[in-house]
Image 1: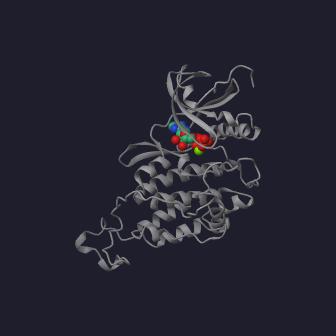
Image 2: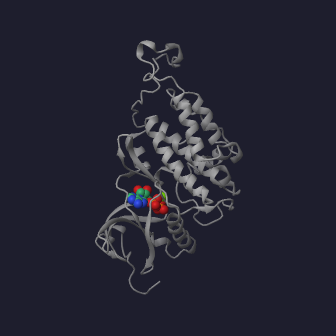
Image 3: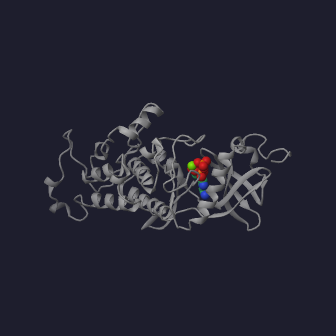
Length: 332
Ligand SMILES: Nc1ncnc2c1ncn2[C@@H]1O[C@H](COP(=O)(O)OP(=O)(O)O)[C@@H](O)[C@H]1O
Ligand SMILES: [Mg+2]
């Protein structure tokens, strides 16, 4: 640390227009548990980047400094189309920073808040991309451990077959496979507990299957608008992850086939051995389950086997299963 006045003398917005290392800060674009993220201009290359700065109140905490430094190393080591490329990392005036590709668009948290549950096709496309990034990390012996909507960035895709391109980000909590984890480290869980696997809570060794669990919680939210467990306080939520049976997907989405329930039941198993062995295996099973439902696109209306679409409990006519209905945002 230097004795010079900190870059952070006031609110984060006071950094707008200032220069940090070779970057001119232009706009605050996000903040999570430990960092502030700005859109900035790389003055050397004249290109826009995302500049992530370790939050000033955490900059003196050794745990957070190590975590932040590790994040840049991990992300830089993983060269993958669905992981944000890191350009540079360093420290200037006591401020730790990471410069990475700027992803114009939104993160999944904002997308869900804005749009509510997504059509199955969209949810599956997004899930596939996140799963491929996670499996790539697992192949490197790394477990992300913080899979949640806020850590998935959504940009415009290349064409109508690929309408969105998503990036997994925030490797701040990433650990080597089989390391022991839990609530023992200061500020280990600074964000939401909605997606945390039972073995992560109880401090047992974690491997890629803890990310399978978290991904399943995220995909449940993509499809229903809420994660599987909703409780009034953190302790009850932690208990639910460890001991409670998750509700079925079809309880919230009766238009989806019951086969999808079995896929989630495995992915959300309390014991990692009972889960799918990879994130892509989970998404593939889910896609197969959803596709196995009768499709009005495949069967023209005159040939639809009406008996294959069970009547809804409330007596209302069931929507066609592949109609990709637009759901209203659901508060929870
Ligand atoms: N490369 C990027 N491009 C655009 N926005 C980003 C980028 N990285 C992060 N963000 C935004 O900043 C938010 C926080 O970033 P994140 O890496 O998750 O930090 P934290 O460790 O504080 O959670 C993200 O949810 C996203 O909205
Ligand atoms: Mg984050």
